[in-house]
Structure formats: C-alpha cells, structure tokens
Length: 562
Image (cartoon, rainbow, N blue to C red; front, side, top):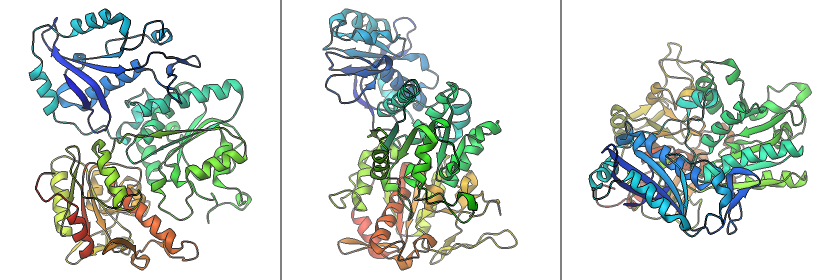
C-alpha cells in the first residue's frame, strides 16, 4: 500500500495505491483509490461532471473523473508503466456515504480506471479489489519498481498542441484544473441557454496548468462548434502556438490571436475568448502601428470583455513584468462590477512546473519578498534541485551537461546588458559578457540568423540553447532545467534587496515618470520570479554581484545532495 503517493512532476497526491498481482494474468496490478468522507453529494445543475457537496462553497469534479485522471496521469508520466497501461485501475470510495445519499453520482458510467463505491456497499468494493489483486501474493516488488521508476519528461505543452486542438484532448487535467475546465464548459453552456454574459478568472502560480487548461478548453469548445479563440499578450507564446498547433492547418493558426486583435470586434461575436497569460493585458491596445480610425481611449479590458459572451482570464499576478500591464484580479473584477457582469474566480493551488515542488515556489516568492516571511534556507526537495554557482562558466557547464543528457536546458538573464543586432555576416554579438565569459542574447528580429531561432521559438527550438533568453522570450514556457543569471539590477545588501534601475537596460523602464522607483522595484522582482520558475526539474543560479552570491549560497544546504 502506497499512501499519499505523489504523482510525477506535480504536488498532487493519490490517497492510496494498492499494488499486487493480477489474479487472471499474473502481471503487476496497480489500483488507485480516492477516498472521500462525503455523506451526501448531488450533481451540480444537471451537469454530471460536476458535484455539489454541502460542506463546499463551489462545485467540484466528480470523484470518478478525478481518479480516472490520476490513472491516466500516472501512466503518461511513469516510465515503468509505458507498456503496462492495462495494469492501472481506479476507484472512488465514499466510505461515509450510502448509495441513496449520493444516488445522482451513479449517473456517470464507470470503467476500469474509475468506479464509484459507497460504504453501505462495501462488499462490492471488496469484490472489485479481489478482481484486480490476487490474495496471498506480494506486490512489494512491483511497488518498488513504481517508486524507483524514471520519470519521463512531461509532454511539452507546445509539442502536443496540434493534437490537442485538432483531434482530441491529450492533456490530463487534475483536481483544480479539471474543476476549472468543467466549470468553464458549464458556464459557456449556461450563458448560451440564458442569453447572458459572465466572466471566469483562473489564477495560479507558474506551472499550475493555466495554459494546459486554456488549450484543453480551446480543443473541446472547438469540437463542440462554439465560436472560440485563444489570445495572449506574448508574441513568443502566440507565434509558437501558431507554428506548432497550426502546423497542418491555416484555420488553426487563425485561432491564436493577440490581446490587441479585438479593437474592432463586434460585441459578443464570440461565445468564448480564452485569455492566456492575462497578467499581460495592457492599459490600451493602441500602439504606433494602430490605424487612425482605431485610435480611441477605449481600454483593452473593455475590448476583451466585449468581444465574447464568456471571457476567461488565466493569470498569475506575480508575472506582471512590464509597465502598462494591468492584468490583475482587482482590475478585472472592478471592470466587471462597473458593467454588472458576474465573475467567478477559481484558484489553482497545485504546482506542475518546478517538479511539483510547492516548497520551491514558496522559497522563491519569500526570497524575492513577494510573499511575507522573508528569505529562508532551501531545505531541499527530492522532486527539484536548486544550486548556486560561483561563475558563469560553472553555470554554462551545468546547462551543457543537462542538455547533453537529453534534457531541455536554457540560460536566462536579467536585462542588464546591451542588445545588439546581428552583424552583417550573420554572426551574433556576445552582449551578455561577464569577465571572460560571454554569450549572445536570443534574436529580437523576425528572421533566423546564424543558426539561432527567432525570438518566439528560442524556448522551444533546440538551437535556442546557444543564446541567453530574456523574460519576454521565457515567459509562458517551460524547460527541464533553468539557468538564471541575476544581474546588477537586483542586489542583496546586508539584510534587503536593492533595485538598481541604472543597471537595467530595458527600454520600457527608462522613463522615471512612467515607471517610478517603487514600481521598478516590484517589476524587477517579478522578472526574476518568472525566470527562476521556468524549470520543471531544477534550477542553477548565478549572480554577477559577489555579496548577492554569498547571500544566496548561505541559503543552500551545507551537505551535498539536495
């Protein structure tokens, strides 16, 4: 029996996994059991995928779907199960409930990976277990295989986007992710039937699955024939989605828009507008290329709310990294209240990036002063490695080793160096220069040069390994191992961080009237928070400032093997 088994690369845990031998085949057998203490539950507003529980303030995913997701996820991410998909079964056991108390929940058909049992029908549950686990045959060896199995890198979000949007749902959604997904589908259907308008805000830190939810919704709503589009404020993210998800169809490419694409949109032309990375919503869509007839004082929020019957905002407030960005919950809720539009907010609590290490994400936020409590020592986490190195050469060596072993690895840095155009002969200028070490920034133009990919594909193209990325090319992406260079725009002095804006080369931060010092301090911390949370399995940190390096090193465990 494996209690509270942590699912790979996520902080989510299965209550119990029973491991043994299949009585029919003699092969290994794994039974995931989700335990619920509910005594009563009913279907939420005739939606069989959602359940109302008296003690909860919001609908939750049907427990059969929940355990089925756990089974699918375990098979997808555990190497030892690659050829043993049929060895995994699942059951939801409501041990405090009677069949009559949860009768509506039986309307969802069960299968091998999801069956529902109640306490008053314990015999049926025992029979189910006996059909999957042979009596008097130990499963210890198979349990050890599961626990020691290599965890294959997760399916990269963008590499399966084409399959996700065009054919079928490829991503496995868990718990809060599934709740959010089901609720949006429910809200879209309700708004259509009631001829009404509403909004949904889905908040979560890095790696909580916001973009997975967004693409899953886009795929499902497209298959349902809804008028739906996906939009972001990131050129890198949008262009990569267009390239990968629209590889075989120009129609699919057209489904990925920018936030400023809706200036002339008719009100409620869309059923749903999925706004990924919504923390990048700006004050206005107007820029220097905007046509004269579209130059109004209308806010970008007004355009996005107006464009769809149900706008869905997916955001992380600590990823606002540019002046003029106002994608916060407060801004969105204030606009909705002024226009009498009901809003539902859903929070995603579990981490899927950073190896599922909630401890690491909390450590980063406390380190940077984005969460109360101040910096603390890194106590280690078996799911995520953290290292501080003494030189950029050390950082480069670590990333090269990871890359050579088949992992995705990238180096990013704060915007503390000039950014040159490529030379006429196509070679790149090594602008990021630290003593005798140097590398070029990622390209900033629309054309691939010198073997380097264009900026939108720096994080996803293997050739991106040769350049240093900035926050604008890294945000929204993930890779196995992150190397981060903290520049002199943020240094540690005695007992606090000092933001040094004169050390920063970002053109957006130059104007003191546009970006006051306290605002710069907040934004630069958010920048490093984004860079430090791109890795799924580990991070290596280097600061160009010696006192900052000593401080960071003092937070690391003294013994080897974190």
